[in-house]
Amino acid sequence: MDLKTEVLVIGGGATGAGIARDLSLRGIPALLIEKGDLLSGASGRNHGLLHSGARYVVSDPEAARECIAENRILRKIAPHCLEETDGLFVSLPEDGLDFRDRFIQACQETTIPAKLLSREETLGLEPDLNPALLSAVKVPDGAIDPFELVLANAKDAEVHGATFLLHTEVTSFLVNGNKVTAAFAKDLLHGEEYRIEASYFINATGAWADNLLKKVGLCLPMALSKGSMLITNQRLSHRVINRCRPPSNGDIIVPNHTVSILGTTSVRLEDVECFEVMPHEVSLLIDETSKMLPNIREARLIRAYAGIRPLFQSEEKDDDRAISRGFVLIDHEMRDGLNNLITITGGKLVTYRLMAEKTVDLICKKLNIDLSCSTHLKPLTKRDHPCSLKDRLKTLGSMETLCDCELVGIEEVIEVLKEGKLKSFQDILRRTRLTKGTCQGAFCVHRLLGLLHDLGMVKEDSNHILKGFLEERWKGIRPILWGSALKEEELIEGIYKGIFNLKKSKEFGVGSSE
Ligand SMILES: Cc1cc2nc3c(=O)[nH]c(=O)nc-3n(C[C@H](O)[C@H](O)[C@H](O)COP(=O)(O)OP(=O)(O)OC[C@H]3O[C@@H](n4cnc5c(N)ncnc54)[C@H](O)[C@@H]3O)c2cc1C
Image (spheres, rainbow, N blue to C red):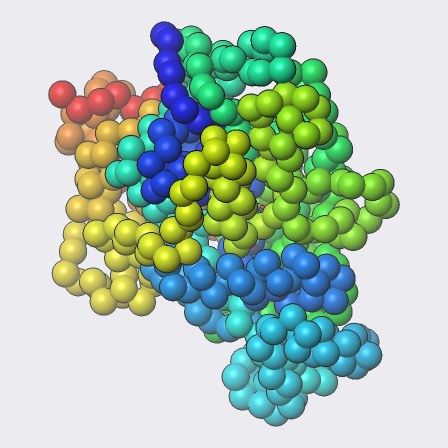
């Protein structure tokens, strides 16, 4: 099929969705193409920390400035995607106080509000912290729900005219002289092929940026840094807990909806498609985070997962943590003589909007038009269903639930199904809180299948869908299988094998309702 647009955005993470929204708000036609579902890259596999910038304030003040500025904007335009928890940078006896003093000074220079708390004040706020702590510094960190954020950007982009092509990979480009004239793409689920003409092409593929550029004979020095994280079965603190020392392994605990997320590690990879959480990373994360919150050792882990940071390497560095978390915007006209290709990569989830603004500013400059950005002013629309844990708790008892851990109602799921963009079972899970809570889908996925049957969206035997889900779930469960997590898994295996009599799977997918 032949398609034509003004700007083709490649990559459906926060950056790509943010660019699509910005372009469409400025009235510039855009098509976004994503090889998986929205959020299948780092945007759906991160720590969910609304950075205040404090983490980078000593080592990378420029990135810290970007974070605090965007933190303030996100609180205004996307309050339903955030939880304003605040964050504590905790000093333990082995950390000393030298770094803490430099940290407070740097926060002042970067305008990040920072308040020093005594040991007693800190324990008053978070009684489960290590009682040996020396002090803590309170900063405006928070929790962010990347799923709500990216889906809200995509929805608003569509409302303003952008179109999305999901599960479709850009496989090659047609280059004519100093211009890219078309991109070729393939629907990875149904095999349909596309030829897409555009005036401008934006590479917003995050950690895949170099892979994509190779298709036009260019390259980009990227460091692929895997970060692994663990999820506990309940919230372990009210606030984000950081270790007050230079960024290292296992020094952040983020409360997120009903759970806490412990992270991260930093391991250099060669292949962006091939990674998993290793058992030694699980041990390292528990050892390090339990120094701040000792009761982590008793907590039940419910899942491990990892993502790849898209780090742009301006010079070779031994330690990936020393590479800037700032973003790079590359005009390939200036760098490589290709007039209509732009790459945007690096940065943070928190800075996605700024990255989009700068990219679209560059497009406007190239188009010689004067259209200003409004994404810092226009709030993102909240979906009809309750987003935050607080709002979900208010609905308790007043709705029929599919997921008891995360209080997801049947109505909410039906609304998502009605939107009709879903091509696979996992797409439904990405658009709701189903399977993200304590039981990790053990007690809600078969209810969801029942609903799909009732709506006529799944016909015949659906055990292959159940099996596909369990195989995906297993990837996150396997690295944490010991202690109480192992017991829970044996129970779930018994339930699923006993009740559903699972057999070998076929390819799974969700059909549309008649
Ligand atoms: C472990 C970890 C923890 C993090 N924690 C935080 C945090 O707490 N707070 C924070 O602010 N930031 C955090 N980040 C950083 C943040 O997640 C990323 O900076 C951000 O999500 C990058 O978004 P993106 O859209 O640029 O890339 P991505 O989300 O990776 O999107 C790129 C997309 O491009 C698609 N794609 C690739 N090739 C093609 C192709 N040929 N055709 C079509 N599509 C293609 C991919 O499928 C992918 O979906 C973390 C990152 C990691 C890895």
